[in-house]
Image (tube, rainbow over all chains, first blue to last red; front, side, top):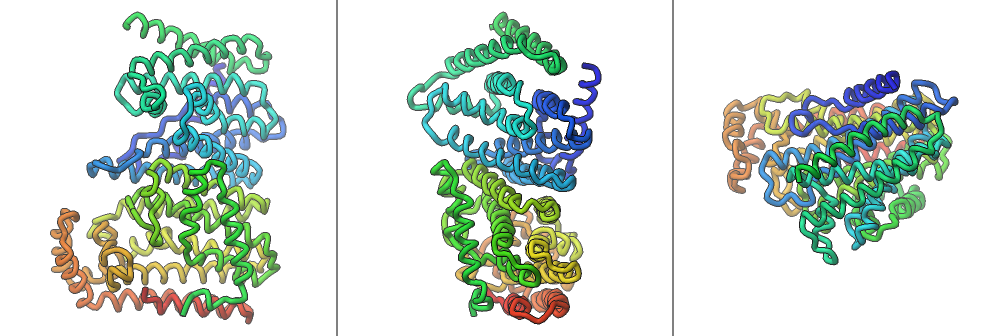
Length: 265
Length: 324
């Protein structure tokens, strides 16, 4: 695990280095890099013998750049009404930064001449935006919303895994990613930060839930997916020992955090 | 004269590209589909596809390959416009409501990302790494140009060099890439590919300078937005830079007047435009544009005689005479 952690840290540093732009950094927060996704991607590429170490590295970095680009665009507010100058500038640069990060993924892969991977990720971006539109626009029930969110959160990893023929851990990865995403929604909501899924649920005409009800509904889904992850981890083959260790550690941490939250009410 | 009358021999191919553009952005989700096709339906000059096709004519012209490149470039341009409208809070584009105005920012972001992805997918059908290297580098430069435009807003101390670097990234490189990609897809000789790239670059520079001049010399009716809009948004263009170089008092006046841009009245704006005109800066900017145009002609001269070559020359002349 020590070696793997070092690799993940190095990948994270490389991604951070790619994202650096002094002017953008002045006005918008540094993008969040989802370490779990790096772990899954690293695990997927690491067993592919036909890829060089450099290709593996570039695949992980490029996929993460796409993820960060899409996540950055998610931060653009629905409307610009009532913005002050600072918020306006931040919204404008958020749009541009997302475009820039997308450009970087494309540039990185084109430099190694990997047209198939460029196409794989482009198709994934297209499909993710179809799902996002459904989630944002259509009248879905909560179960459907969470399912779409699961697809959105895991689709890039799914497509890379399918491209490389390494799909064994996909469902667990998707369950883990939706659970952690939902949990972070709850955290954001409690801190009065942007929590788009909770907003969708509360504004849904069929539910009209209060914040507390929405939080507890989301928490049930988190538990459901975490239980699925726990069960499937026990059946994983030994070649996934690294990622299994990582998830077990975080699963334990997540359970402990939940206990604290319950105790504190 | 209409631009399209310069290249009637491309009409059938342009129709095919138009059809392909429409097919490429037929999303599954009805709102995403309508949003994506909204801008396409509003029309446009399709100058980038035209440059692709004309460049391909100097080599082994294969319409399927040309279409993939042309569609991809036009979609990249469209995706950037969709996102630009979110940045600028624009209500209208080509006389139609923008996606962000008809729906909202979120829908515009999804539509822009969707169109971008379709552009890359479309180009991937060629399985040619070199075309991706050219396009991806251009896209990154384009984004850097946008950052620069932001950084330079209301910076009254910027110089002509800063401006030229900005418009190179903002406009000229994508037009240059259109010519180059058309040449690469058509297996045009390296010598002619370079000439085509430089033609595109110089025409693009000239086009943007004229655009910036027109912002000050056209009427609101001709522009579809108030005259001097660039200045109101903080974009300091070549005629303004030349005018400030010639008249230090004007520079000081602009610094004071635009301290709070929202408070600038139409009458004040008209006075500023008149002041800029009186310095002779408009003529100087047009002379700079002409120098780029001359370089474009010099590059076309290196190409073999053909209908495509004549079309390139006439397009450059058209751009030089453009007054709306």
